[in-house]
Every structure is written in structure tokens, then in C-alpha cells.
Length: 216
Image (tube, rainbow, N blue to C red; front, side):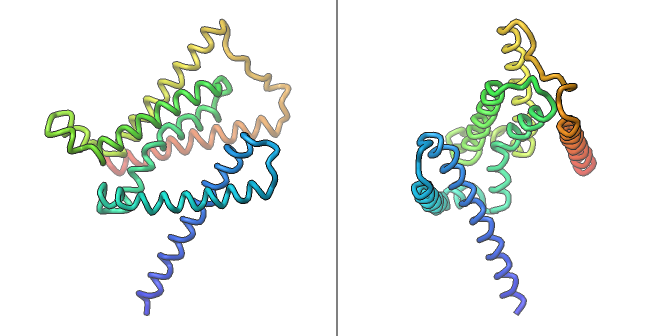
């Protein structure tokens, strides 16, 4: 009956999510790692590398199941807590790159790397090593600290590191990073950049306003 239909829908959505995840992972390994390391690789070898990467991701997924069972009894909360590891840093560097041309590759790598490393450390302390923290004040703080609040904290820290790196690079070079003259850009490029900047800022303001209205 309807229970079977719902089970089929859930399984279909689950398989679609896994397929997209495995496909994205194999593409990253093939195009960003293998092809850059071996630029003269043939199409056949890249196809095999992609297949091996998909199999490896599937095996790692099965091996990770006991960790999921140990950390949380609710799968949705587990997924959200894991995504909070990189959500803040990725959002900050994306918005910064869209809204400013003074952001450099080095500043993005440093700030995003520190932010993600902080997220991994926080997740491990809260979910894997919480027993080792004991019942101290610090241990209680880590265990009870909501992962959504941590996402905001990591975003702020990443933004501070990013801005600091930009100013340090400009201080070392002795001048601000030269931005291309907007007048020399095509009108479509200027409008596109302005549209993305306005969209990003508007989305951020709307999100903050909605969250404030809900949880205030």
C-alpha cells in the first residue's frame, strides 16, 4: 500500500543522493588530482581512476557507518553537524571572493584551512572524544555547545583571519592589491559581478533576519 510507496520514495531519494555524492567525489579525484598530476593521461585511464575513486568512496562509507551509530541516534542531526565543519568557512570565502577583488588565493587557502581544521577538531571533541574531556567546565561547554552556534563562530573566525591575511599581504607588498579597472571590463561582466554581490548580501541579510525572528 502507501507504506510501500513511501519506502520506494525514500530509497529513490537515498540512492540519488549517494549517486550524486559518488559522482562528485570521483570527478574531484579525477580532474583535480589525477589530471593535474598526470596531464598527459588518456581518457581511458581517467575513466578507470574515476571508477576506483567511486569504489573507494563506497567502501569508506560502509566503514563510517559505526561512527554514525556511535555519534548520534538521529541521522538528520548527524548530517547537519558534519556539514557545520565547513559551512562557515566556505560561505565566508565565497562571499568574500564575490564581493571583493582584493582577496587572494593565499588568504583564501589559509583562512579556509584554519576554519575547516577548527571544525574538524570541534566535531571530534564533541562526538568522538567527549568522554576524555571528563566533567570539567570545558568538557560541559563543548558537549552542550550547539553546532549551529559553532557555525556562526567559525564563520566569524574565518572572516577575521581572511581580512587579516589580506591586510598582511598588502602591508608586505607595500601597496593594496591592484584591482582591474572597471571601465575596461565589459558591461555584462560588471553587471554580473554586481548582481552576484547584491544577491549574496541580500541572501545573507534575509537568512539572519529569518533566524533572528524564529529563535529570538
